[in-house]
Image (cartoon, rainbow, N blue to C red):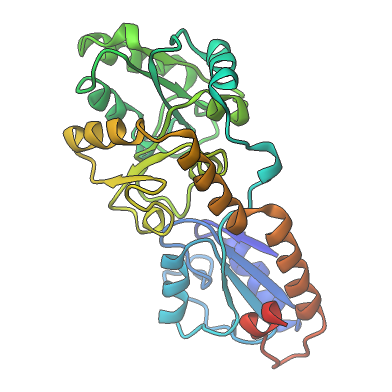
Length: 309
């Protein structure tokens, strides 16, 4: 089983080994633009190996599934979301929301709390939400949280000693007293229980698990309209809103999402849990792996047939 989020000689070697030795293979595609075909080490060309037989390709978004179809992979591609332990995420009532809010912020019962939890990568667009908050009424408060980058991270983003720059930017915008920023381990259940609205302005995202966790908790989501995978989940007016990365449009969307009542939040949660529950997806995964383990060299797996049987 290979979890693919970029090019790697080790990944290419593992795939080649499975193909040369008739070992059943599962390849998971988890990032935008990820591909099951890897470059040969030291060469900028794809290795011509067979992925149509004795293998299953897992795509965590419809966009990645379409990419596989463009490569001639069809029957053995399973398009499914990241599984979520939905038993952890419930719709919080007003009392529970206030209790959770007091643990993570100074926002009052009458404030509207906007939450964004994700790693402090540049492509996650934390600073964009500061621009949005500056266009919202004073009762809207923002909490930013998530892991900081570490020395071994090679992608652009903020390390722990750089995160205060976000607070400096908030102060420059005149909203410093309405923004709380933290980093390190985050209890996602607690943050979502406290939130009125969850935002996800990230770019180049295969599929954001925090977005799915928010829906599971019944929290309306405002997400980047330019990310195809977000459009698979967010339906304007039903469970949140999609908007391009324009601060004024996002401010309007956040205000609209904040109006969702408890009944609508329960509907959001029920609809999401029916699709993303780890209990459901794990059973499907086990069924596929059992089938794959019994396939012979040259035999293909029909994902739809296996899961519908």
